[in-house]
Amino acid sequence: MIHDFGKYLLFIAALFKNRLPFKIYYQQTIIEAMRIGIHSVGLIAFIALFMGAVTAIQTAYNLQGPLFQNFLLGLIVRDMTILELAPTITSLVFAGKVGSSMAGEIGTMRITEQIDALEIMGINAKSYLVLPKICATIWMYPLLVILSAFLSIYGGLLISSFLNLVPKQDFIVGLRMHFSLYNIFFALAKSCAFAFLIASIATYRGFYTFGGALAVGKASTQAVTHSCMAILITDYLLAQLLL
Amino acid sequence: MITFQNISQSFHNKTILHNISGQFYTGKINMVIGKSGTGKSVLLKNILGIIPPTQGKVFYDHQNFTALTNKKKILIKKKIGVLFQGGALFDAKTVAENVQLPLDFFTTMSTKEKKTRVAQCLSEVGLTHAHNKMPAALSGGMKKRVGIARAIIHHPSYLFCDEPNSGLDPQTALIIDELIQKITHTYKITTIIVTHDMQAVFGIGEHILFLDQGKKIWEGAKKELPNAKIPALQAFLFAGQIMKTYQKNLMESK
Image (tube, rainbow over the protein chains, first blue to last red):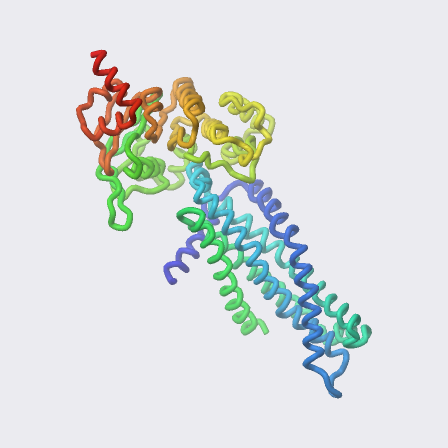
């Protein structure tokens, strides 16, 4: 495991050696941003809406009683969404979708000798293939988290109104109450860290694929499981450090 | 000219190549032949620097490639073109983009100049109408031809081909062989082909190196090949029924 971690660190360091012209990174990053970001909007939106709705229903269910103030529902949904659900739960789904795809893509390039072809041309294949993916993920994922947070809170508001859990105005009062901008900073900082972990772990797993189709499948699975573990550990560490 | 001295390669304490030395000549088609699993592709990867040899030296025109720094190795790598067994084309790029790739990285050519050079190379391999096709839409032979176009786009001094005929029908294989032969002689390239296709060996091969069980058994000109009194080489060359007939005719003509 220590050997693997060391190899991962060397892999990250190699991304910055023998760099290519900036124009090439720029073009590749735009292409990757489209694939990673724009193509994930639908899934993230779907998950966020239902995540918010379920959070509202379960919170209302647990907080029934005379001491429960209506505005608390909006406040709890907002803070849960911003602090945890939007950055962390979305990242686990994102690791499944984007991480496995990255590992599969690079793994296939490895076994079909496309990476060898780049290296023989004297191109730093790690830098050319991986760096744009990491940059695009760090760029797009926080935007997806903002969208996810917005839709999740909106989902909570919609379901609260629809099921008459609390009056709409009370929910909105809760949303505005004791709002801390630091929570947004915390969520975005987490998002950037998770984005880096997902992209770097997935590409690392893909890059060191050896064998055939079975190895590519294994690399994709490892990319997702290792990303999820890294996300949860980092989530704990950041919560301990920043809150 | 490429020279290699005492190349040995081991993986997990298992020796794949044993002390191999030899030469590949400029302007000639040099072939590495041998049974499957005998270490031909590993030797090719050693020479290309994809797998650094456990022991031994590789010289590209008297420059010790194995001892060079990475930056200096890149200068030599820019003079190398490689045709991979499966073509190794980038799935997400069109044929023209695949061929243009080395120019994007290493030249300051304008877009117009790059397009002209791509058109020239694709025309040379007979694919003038495939510019915008994706690799998935190409046949095996077409992929190999695109691979050749990409390998020669930056005027390489050395061309490596890893089993260029594998998976091709005899007619297409012949077209690929003739194409490699034409390119080698026109541009005076040092071409190295790893193969076990006897049609290619007797058709276009000029300098042959025979490996068996990770050892160099024989090296010499093609015309000396049938006279080499080495049982392993003779058994390999004339394994098929057609080649046995060829050998018989050869003996009778003497």
